[in-house]
Length: 424
Image (tube, rainbow, N blue to C red; front, side):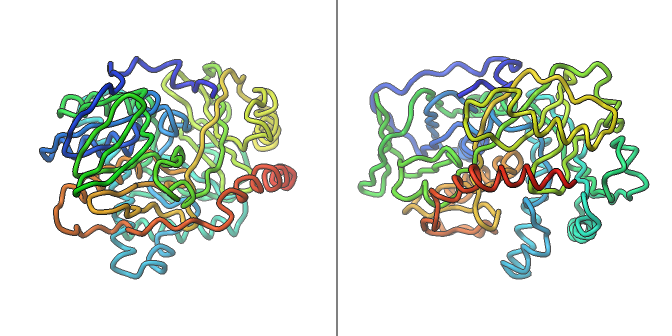
């Protein structure tokens, strides 16, 4: 899999070794991304002896392969829709959890003193139709009621942020921002090590057994026994636990990164605020990193080995339509990642047995929520009684068309979306 920009520009992570031989712990965490590292840190801080197993290197999966933006919010949903689904009490608690997850991003970096280019700049979502602006107004009211800082931007004021007249207004999520996700994960790993977590990389979990109220996790060269188990592999979940890889849709996504922009993007985004539009047919938007590179998520091509030119073609064409007279960024990097998408876009815990859960389902919003769900998993596992949590706890139940839906999206819906998107 192609190396991401973050792998090129981030300082090395902490040293770790492959698990070799038998080991014991109070808790085993499988997965070295945001959720697993956050869970391991939380368990260690509450006094547990923790071993974390990562199949490759820390942050290798979606954690180190995203576009580096976070914001409060449910992908494609309003706070009110969550309340309607889960009821007033549970839905409101979930919305507050989401709000606090966004705040956790900055707080963890400050608490542990690691540097990952965390910039709480805000994130602007712009409406490509009047109807979408009406939806943004409703979302704004929902988050405002939760004391989450959002700001409606009128069509007249969009020019302060983007040099275009193609949008009908926007919503600025003032508590969102940008970061280097791989550097963040490596900082989190250092914090976990300092708290006493034992981390083994290049140590994929290949089998899980339960015996006498303990969990036995085997790797190619060793094993760990503990009374608690957290599987935190999200879109990179395989057949480790029967059926767990069938409870979500694994959706591919491509990322692009440019050379540093000479004017730091002032020609087309004078506000320097990362943005994305509401046209879900085809992604359009992006951010700048600390070096002034423009980074964008784009729909993948039919092959994972598509060239940089093929991946950027649709984005560049829309860029020229949206920002008339301005040339697109000069692209230098491209890489692929995968999303763990669940139908209602609300992450959950999957019940695996006594003292064992899996945490996943971020649907493209895994930076803040992954960190928060990892901490919540640690709290739940550290409580001998059944803890009170707003997060849905369900049994693993395979989704219909689990294998087919991502293929339909990639080979049918994505090409169709590119065609239809030319209208906007």
